[in-house]
Image 1 (cartoon, rainbow, N blue to C red):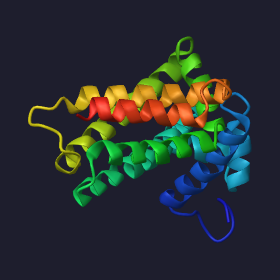
Image 2: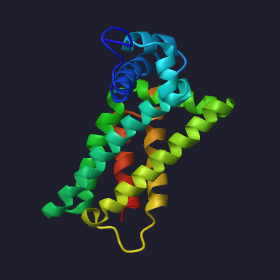
Image 3: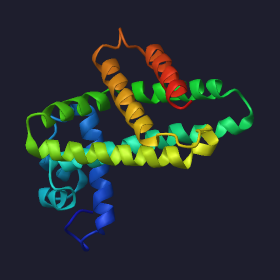
Image 4: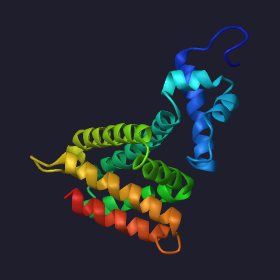
Length: 204
């Protein structure tokens, strides 16, 4: 039930339904191929409900991508608990890289949508603001997760969590985009190898 009928649904339910349908649309059609009015209709709401919750298409995409990235980052860093098993850390990090590569290459539409969004940010001030907020949110979240998992990962005292987060974030998004654009060059195995070397090198 949308905004009409037995009453207006809670704000949290509206956001969740809009995010769900927006994620499906962005993945299938990319950033440029999606209209806010279509997402709103698919979710059962008016366009105004989307704007009141997300401020527009750039804000909506940022919310969708941030949710996806947080899920991926949480999954990847959560695997750091395997380090406690006593296996060599390089072996564990390569296993993390293998599973992360599988996740990143399973749905290349996400990378192409992000690529469109990032390119538009260079020219469109509204998109640029949303992209900057998204980037800052991702970096802050990843930095915090690295701090939270520092002991399990075995990071030394004085480790630069923020710089490590920046290196991991830019590398992950870059590899995902390269795979989406030229999978015959940057295939899943190459993504896995690059991520393995990255994690071992950065989280040393």
